[in-house]
Image (tube, rainbow, N blue to C red; front, side, top):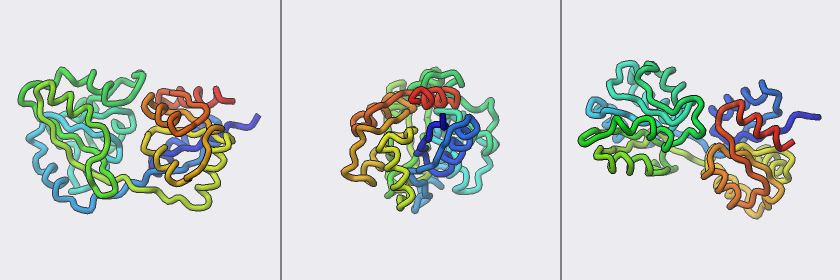
Length: 257
């Protein structure tokens, strides 16, 4: 029986890493990035945040892209950071370590965590937050550079007595979607390949790129319940939820066979 074809929808750099891991596991993985990553146009807020790092007890990075664009902005030597660094998942942890942050300075959900999200991170770091403690959240923005994404963690920080600032380190834009991308997406729509979603935004961009497409035959693996809900709302016929760990993803994908 041929290996299941898998469509990886993460941004290009992350998709390449995921495709390699899935192919190593024997799956026919193909990259179809649905979100592009671009620098911010106006870096004044980002540069100002870099100058204020010493004012923060912790800096939370929402993604590996947030790490890379934050430190690249002014050639900051990450190893000299004084605040704690918070990360929601292993990809962000890896990016922090590659930037020079010591493992002992990073707080993140354990490798065995059921989900890698803000809730899992908060369970890990909530005891660090108290009156007067200030946290910087480094996140992505929309195509215009305005903050985009969940505000759940910032609300929890404020509710615990802390203060929270947000800075946009990169923009999420539409990824190229030409004839080759349309052909691969059509395979997925017919159920001939299994979609792998790690972002509800990716599902929204897919629907915008393929208007009028029926998704009832499509099969998808989502790395979070909220993403699975978005796929079901879009009309995907079969949706399964998996941890983002490689072993769990492979098992979920193969369970469709």
